[in-house]
Length: 351
Figure 1 (tube, rainbow, N blue to C red):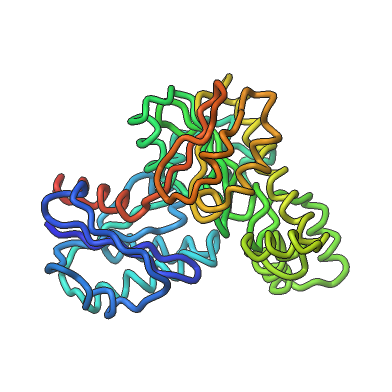
Figure 2 (figure 1 turned 45 degrees about the vertical axis):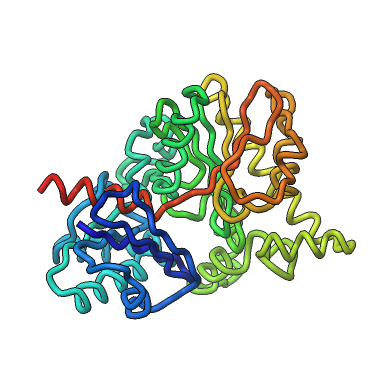
């Protein structure tokens, strides 16, 4: 069974080809946004099944599922909880159905990894009849990195920082998510590229009273906050690091705020885990910005975190340990496409 993994983001469509030999025989590719037709034209074999990342599965989808009309309608209904992502996933699934008629599609949900969150971690302190709770996201990435950490024999108490344009942190014990920084939607938690993360709800009420419309609030919170909002120039860490080096005080503040919030969450998750054996950085910023890893880890020395700066700054894209202290610190490139393929193989082989 040859599987195509599709990983739609808000501005890209990553993919990977995984042959019948199984997910261990990897042929991944991760270019910028492409149309499905271009991806299929590059396929080295006939496609027997497709796995698709879906950001929000709500309370209904706690594991990967074979897509039918009912499942697709449910994913579409959940778009109000992830308006930047679920509609794109729906569009990708619909295009696959039109293009690869009869080929089974498996939806793999970012929220599913966090199905193990205990009530104390997923409950908001509001009346239950409101029907809101914390779900968590980036679960496909966390699942992949958590498996790697266990293979590396790095203990059982792990904190993973998925730092990209969207950013979050997860506390993982024995491969199970016990807390995570994103909540009901992907807007809670860390400072992100264009999302501000944690925000006093009173700010929203204040802006509403000032006459800000729902559409303007949506745009503000999703597209004009975070690194971009603080720096007033960019949500891209690479651009901000160059600007900060040239003396831009707003860029420096944005970077420091990003690091401060990430370090604060990592430290708090030591309390959730009753300690920590390993910290892992992944995703675009986590994998590629040695400077940001230093900014974060320098705030965590009291935990026994001590970076090996030579290893941290090495021009390498490979998985590697970058610490010399008692807490292992790793850079682990995520591979969501491989994880999606693994789930697709498992679901379809059980049919």
